[in-house]
Image (cartoon, rainbow, N blue to C red; front, side, top):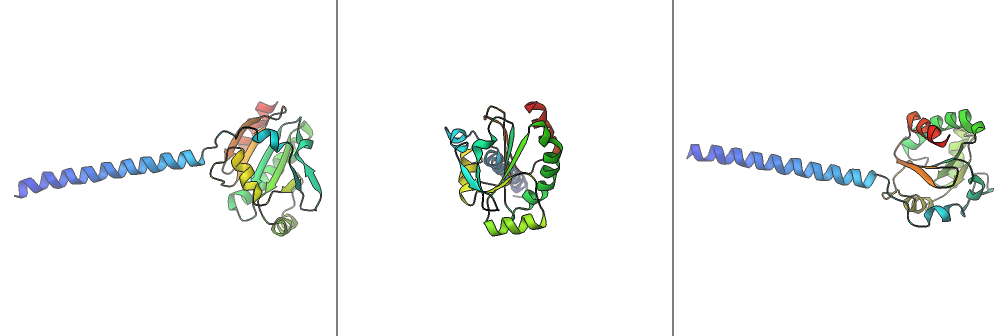
Length: 182
């Protein structure tokens, strides 16, 4: 009886191991699919350029003012650690490249009072606008299926989406965009 239970036990272990590997692969595939930026919805880009937002100072900001030059549109929030961590790098990039015709716009998906407090502690010289909760839907329409933050969309000078990134930007991401935009 011992001879039969050893192969049976080994077979059962291998079966469980195989099932575990398959479940892990399926989970990784699903996570990759959810976190990979998707295509923008039809007409999402066109309607984006017609949008207006308020700045933290209460002024109106029209996205149509950003047409005609490359634009990095960064969706962020004060409660999002990777967002807050990447902002100084985006600020440095902006200061370095603003004179070259590249634009940056931060769309805050947050409460106006939280954004104002944040900007008092960490001023940004690139434009920031308040998208509120509607910003999540806007980011989804541009290809952020999960609505996660940070989410960045790179637009070419002709107003079309050049690239998107879900997750924290790197300096290499920004330099690749500069190379492609030039």
